[in-house]
Length: 281
Image (cartoon, rainbow, N blue to C red; front, side, top):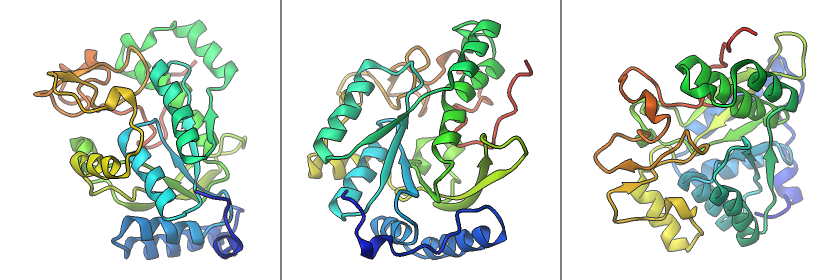
Protein backbone atom coordinates (compact mmCIF):
# COMPACT_ATOMS: atom_id res chain seq x y z
CA UNK A 1 0.00 0.00 0.00
CA UNK A 2 1.41 3.32 -1.03
CA UNK A 3 0.55 6.97 -0.66
CA UNK A 4 -2.60 7.57 -2.74
CA UNK A 5 -1.88 9.01 -6.17
CA UNK A 6 -3.92 11.83 -7.74
CA UNK A 7 -5.74 9.27 -9.86
CA UNK A 8 -7.02 7.48 -6.78
CA UNK A 9 -7.71 10.55 -4.67
CA UNK A 10 -9.57 12.75 -7.09
CA UNK A 11 -12.95 11.41 -6.02
CA UNK A 12 -14.51 13.72 -3.46
CA UNK A 13 -18.08 12.62 -4.08
CA UNK A 14 -18.91 11.74 -0.48
CA UNK A 15 -19.62 14.85 1.62
CA UNK A 16 -17.91 14.84 5.00
CA UNK A 17 -20.81 16.55 6.75
CA UNK A 18 -23.65 14.36 7.96
CA UNK A 19 -26.95 14.74 6.18
CA UNK A 20 -29.06 13.63 3.25
CA UNK A 21 -26.35 14.25 0.64
CA UNK A 22 -23.81 12.12 2.47
CA UNK A 23 -26.30 9.33 3.06
CA UNK A 24 -27.32 9.31 -0.60
CA UNK A 25 -23.70 9.25 -1.80
CA UNK A 26 -22.85 6.38 0.54
CA UNK A 27 -25.90 4.40 -0.55
CA UNK A 28 -24.99 4.90 -4.21
CA UNK A 29 -21.46 3.64 -3.54
CA UNK A 30 -22.79 0.71 -1.52
CA UNK A 31 -25.01 -0.28 -4.44
CA UNK A 32 -22.01 -0.21 -6.78
CA UNK A 33 -19.93 -2.31 -4.41
CA UNK A 34 -22.71 -4.85 -3.93
CA UNK A 35 -22.72 -5.51 -7.68
CA UNK A 36 -19.00 -6.42 -7.71
CA UNK A 37 -17.97 -10.01 -7.00
CA UNK A 38 -14.17 -9.76 -6.98
CA UNK A 39 -13.05 -8.68 -3.50
CA UNK A 40 -10.03 -6.70 -4.69
CA UNK A 41 -12.04 -4.85 -7.33
CA UNK A 42 -14.62 -4.14 -4.65
CA UNK A 43 -11.89 -2.73 -2.42
CA UNK A 44 -10.31 -0.75 -5.28
CA UNK A 45 -13.62 0.88 -6.22
CA UNK A 46 -14.28 1.78 -2.59
CA UNK A 47 -10.84 3.37 -2.26
CA UNK A 48 -11.12 5.29 -5.53
CA UNK A 49 -14.52 6.68 -4.53
CA UNK A 50 -13.34 8.14 -1.23
CA UNK A 51 -11.00 10.95 -0.27
CA UNK A 52 -7.49 10.10 1.00
CA UNK A 53 -7.50 8.38 4.38
CA UNK A 54 -11.26 7.88 4.52
CA UNK A 55 -11.25 4.13 3.86
CA UNK A 56 -9.86 2.24 6.82
CA UNK A 57 -9.34 -1.39 7.82
CA UNK A 58 -9.80 -2.31 11.45
CA UNK A 59 -7.84 -5.43 12.34
CA UNK A 60 -6.99 -7.35 15.50
CA UNK A 61 -4.16 -9.23 13.80
CA UNK A 62 -6.25 -12.19 12.72
CA UNK A 63 -6.08 -14.09 9.45
CA UNK A 64 -8.64 -12.23 7.36
CA UNK A 65 -7.38 -8.79 8.31
CA UNK A 66 -3.89 -9.80 7.23
CA UNK A 67 -5.29 -11.23 3.98
CA UNK A 68 -6.94 -7.87 3.25
CA UNK A 69 -3.67 -6.05 3.96
CA UNK A 70 -1.88 -8.48 1.63
CA UNK A 71 -4.49 -8.08 -1.12
CA UNK A 72 -4.40 -4.29 -0.86
CA UNK A 73 -0.61 -4.46 -1.06
CA UNK A 74 -0.69 -6.68 -4.15
CA UNK A 75 -3.21 -4.45 -5.94
CA UNK A 76 -1.70 -1.13 -4.80
CA UNK A 77 -4.90 -0.07 -3.03
CA UNK A 78 -4.42 2.80 -0.54
CA UNK A 79 -5.82 1.71 2.79
CA UNK A 80 -5.53 3.09 6.29
CA UNK A 81 -5.07 0.41 8.93
CA UNK A 82 -5.88 0.69 12.62
CA UNK A 83 -6.14 -1.65 15.57
CA UNK A 84 -7.78 -1.31 18.95
CA UNK A 85 -5.20 -1.80 21.69
CA UNK A 86 -7.40 -2.71 24.65
CA UNK A 87 -4.32 -2.66 26.92
CA UNK A 88 -4.96 -6.38 27.51
CA UNK A 89 -3.61 -7.83 24.27
CA UNK A 90 -1.37 -10.88 24.04
CA UNK A 91 2.31 -9.83 23.84
CA UNK A 92 2.46 -11.78 20.57
CA UNK A 93 -0.29 -9.55 19.16
CA UNK A 94 1.58 -6.37 20.02
CA UNK A 95 4.73 -7.73 18.39
CA UNK A 96 2.79 -8.95 15.35
CA UNK A 97 1.67 -5.43 14.44
CA UNK A 98 5.33 -4.40 14.38
CA UNK A 99 5.97 -7.33 12.04
CA UNK A 100 3.15 -6.27 9.70
CA UNK A 101 4.41 -2.70 9.61
CA UNK A 102 7.91 -3.84 8.71
CA UNK A 103 6.78 -6.42 6.14
CA UNK A 104 4.36 -4.15 4.25
CA UNK A 105 5.95 -0.76 4.88
CA UNK A 106 2.77 0.58 6.48
CA UNK A 107 1.85 2.39 9.66
CA UNK A 108 -0.83 0.79 11.84
CA UNK A 109 -2.64 3.27 14.06
CA UNK A 110 -3.04 2.06 17.66
CA UNK A 111 -6.27 3.27 19.25
CA UNK A 112 -6.62 3.01 23.03
CA UNK A 113 -9.48 3.22 25.52
CA UNK A 114 -10.26 6.59 27.03
CA UNK A 115 -8.33 6.91 30.31
CA UNK A 116 -11.21 8.42 32.27
CA UNK A 117 -13.77 5.90 31.03
CA UNK A 118 -11.42 3.02 31.83
CA UNK A 119 -10.56 4.30 35.31
CA UNK A 120 -14.23 4.84 36.17
CA UNK A 121 -15.17 1.33 35.02
CA UNK A 122 -12.42 -0.29 37.10
CA UNK A 123 -13.23 1.77 40.20
CA UNK A 124 -16.90 0.82 40.05
CA UNK A 125 -16.76 -2.78 38.84
CA UNK A 126 -13.19 -4.05 39.33
CA UNK A 127 -10.53 -5.19 36.90
CA UNK A 128 -12.09 -8.61 36.28
CA UNK A 129 -15.72 -7.53 35.93
CA UNK A 130 -16.13 -9.70 32.82
CA UNK A 131 -16.41 -12.78 35.05
CA UNK A 132 -19.40 -11.38 36.95
CA UNK A 133 -22.06 -11.37 34.24
CA UNK A 134 -22.62 -11.17 30.50
CA UNK A 135 -23.71 -7.55 30.93
CA UNK A 136 -20.45 -6.63 32.64
CA UNK A 137 -18.41 -8.48 30.02
CA UNK A 138 -20.14 -6.44 27.34
CA UNK A 139 -19.53 -3.25 29.33
CA UNK A 140 -15.81 -4.06 29.58
CA UNK A 141 -15.71 -4.66 25.83
CA UNK A 142 -17.59 -1.42 25.26
CA UNK A 143 -15.05 0.64 27.17
CA UNK A 144 -11.92 -1.17 25.99
CA UNK A 145 -12.88 -1.87 22.39
CA UNK A 146 -16.24 -0.64 21.08
CA UNK A 147 -15.99 3.02 22.02
CA UNK A 148 -12.37 3.29 20.82
CA UNK A 149 -13.54 1.72 17.56
CA UNK A 150 -16.22 4.40 17.21
CA UNK A 151 -13.56 7.08 17.71
CA UNK A 152 -11.26 5.48 15.14
CA UNK A 153 -14.07 5.63 12.57
CA UNK A 154 -15.22 9.20 13.16
CA UNK A 155 -13.59 10.52 9.95
CA UNK A 156 -14.04 7.37 7.84
CA UNK A 157 -16.39 6.80 4.88
CA UNK A 158 -15.69 3.08 4.35
CA UNK A 159 -14.94 0.78 7.27
CA UNK A 160 -13.27 -2.41 6.02
CA UNK A 161 -13.57 -5.48 8.24
CA UNK A 162 -12.34 -9.06 8.23
CA UNK A 163 -15.75 -10.57 8.96
CA UNK A 164 -16.47 -13.95 7.36
CA UNK A 165 -19.74 -15.88 7.36
CA UNK A 166 -18.03 -19.12 8.39
CA UNK A 167 -16.73 -17.63 11.64
CA UNK A 168 -19.90 -18.33 13.61
CA UNK A 169 -23.63 -18.92 13.27
CA UNK A 170 -24.15 -15.37 14.52
CA UNK A 171 -22.17 -14.04 11.52
CA UNK A 172 -23.66 -16.38 8.92
CA UNK A 173 -26.04 -13.77 7.51
CA UNK A 174 -23.64 -10.83 7.59
CA UNK A 175 -23.89 -8.72 4.41
CA UNK A 176 -20.76 -7.98 2.42
CA UNK A 177 -21.75 -4.33 2.10
CA UNK A 178 -24.03 -2.24 4.27
CA UNK A 179 -24.65 1.40 5.08
CA UNK A 180 -24.69 1.75 8.84
CA UNK A 181 -24.51 4.35 11.58
CA UNK A 182 -22.36 4.61 14.68
CA UNK A 183 -22.51 7.09 17.57
CA UNK A 184 -20.55 10.32 17.24
CA UNK A 185 -18.81 10.38 20.62
CA UNK A 186 -17.49 13.89 19.95
CA UNK A 187 -21.02 15.27 19.92
CA UNK A 188 -23.16 16.03 22.96
CA UNK A 189 -26.27 15.26 20.91
CA UNK A 190 -27.53 11.95 19.55
CA UNK A 191 -25.86 12.65 16.21
CA UNK A 192 -24.78 9.56 14.28
CA UNK A 193 -21.91 9.05 11.87
CA UNK A 194 -23.00 7.29 8.67
CA UNK A 195 -20.54 5.08 6.81
CA UNK A 196 -20.22 1.95 4.69
CA UNK A 197 -19.19 -1.28 6.38
CA UNK A 198 -17.38 -3.49 3.87
CA UNK A 199 -16.38 -7.13 4.39
CA UNK A 200 -14.63 -7.99 1.09
CA UNK A 201 -13.76 -11.58 2.07
CA UNK A 202 -17.13 -12.38 3.62
CA UNK A 203 -17.59 -15.57 1.55
CA UNK A 204 -14.06 -16.94 1.98
CA UNK A 205 -13.60 -19.76 4.45
CA UNK A 206 -10.58 -20.17 6.69
CA UNK A 207 -8.92 -22.70 4.38
CA UNK A 208 -9.06 -20.25 1.48
CA UNK A 209 -7.70 -17.42 3.61
CA UNK A 210 -4.83 -19.57 4.82
CA UNK A 211 -4.05 -20.74 1.28
CA UNK A 212 -3.97 -17.14 0.05
CA UNK A 213 -1.63 -16.08 2.84
CA UNK A 214 0.60 -19.12 2.36
CA UNK A 215 0.97 -18.48 -1.36
CA UNK A 216 1.83 -14.85 -0.65
CA UNK A 217 4.28 -15.86 2.10
CA UNK A 218 2.57 -13.37 4.36
CA UNK A 219 3.53 -13.27 8.04
CA UNK A 220 0.96 -14.91 10.32
CA UNK A 221 0.19 -14.12 13.92
CA UNK A 222 2.31 -16.68 15.81
CA UNK A 223 -0.68 -17.85 17.86
CA UNK A 224 -2.66 -18.51 14.68
CA UNK A 225 -0.06 -20.55 12.85
CA UNK A 226 -1.36 -23.95 11.83
CA UNK A 227 -0.96 -26.63 14.47
CA UNK A 228 -1.59 -30.34 14.42
CA UNK A 229 -2.30 -30.38 18.14
CA UNK A 230 -5.75 -30.93 19.63
CA UNK A 231 -5.92 -27.44 21.17
CA UNK A 232 -5.44 -24.25 19.16
CA UNK A 233 -6.44 -20.59 18.91
CA UNK A 234 -9.41 -20.10 16.58
CA UNK A 235 -9.59 -16.34 17.13
CA UNK A 236 -7.84 -13.74 19.24
CA UNK A 237 -8.91 -11.01 21.62
CA UNK A 238 -7.78 -9.98 25.08
CA UNK A 239 -5.77 -12.22 27.39
CA UNK A 240 -7.95 -14.14 29.88
CA UNK A 241 -10.99 -13.62 27.63
CA UNK A 242 -9.38 -15.71 24.87
CA UNK A 243 -8.26 -19.31 25.30
CA UNK A 244 -7.28 -22.18 23.08
CA UNK A 245 -10.11 -24.46 22.04
CA UNK A 246 -10.44 -28.08 21.03
CA UNK A 247 -10.97 -29.03 17.40
CA UNK A 248 -14.38 -30.52 18.23
CA UNK A 249 -15.65 -27.28 19.77
CA UNK A 250 -17.71 -24.71 17.81
CA UNK A 251 -16.08 -21.56 16.40
CA UNK A 252 -15.36 -18.89 19.02
CA UNK A 253 -15.72 -21.39 21.88
CA UNK A 254 -12.40 -20.05 23.14
CA UNK A 255 -13.83 -16.56 23.63
CA UNK A 256 -15.31 -15.88 27.10
CA UNK A 257 -15.25 -19.60 27.79
CA UNK A 258 -17.12 -19.27 31.09
CA UNK A 259 -20.27 -18.39 29.11
CA UNK A 260 -20.16 -21.53 26.93
CA UNK A 261 -22.81 -23.40 28.93
CA UNK A 262 -25.52 -21.12 27.54
CA UNK A 263 -26.18 -21.84 23.87
CA UNK A 264 -28.06 -18.56 23.62
CA UNK A 265 -25.06 -16.41 24.47
CA UNK A 266 -23.57 -14.59 21.51
CA UNK A 267 -19.78 -14.64 21.49
CA UNK A 268 -19.13 -11.09 20.31
CA UNK A 269 -17.20 -8.16 21.74
CA UNK A 270 -19.80 -5.73 20.40
CA UNK A 271 -17.93 -4.04 17.55
CA UNK A 272 -20.15 -5.84 15.03
CA UNK A 273 -23.36 -5.42 17.01
CA UNK A 274 -25.75 -2.45 17.29
CA UNK A 275 -24.41 0.27 19.63
CA UNK A 276 -24.55 -1.06 23.21
CA UNK A 277 -26.64 0.03 26.16
CA UNK A 278 -24.03 -0.11 28.90
CA UNK A 279 -24.47 -0.50 32.63
CA UNK A 280 -25.83 2.66 34.21
CA UNK A 281 -23.27 4.30 36.46
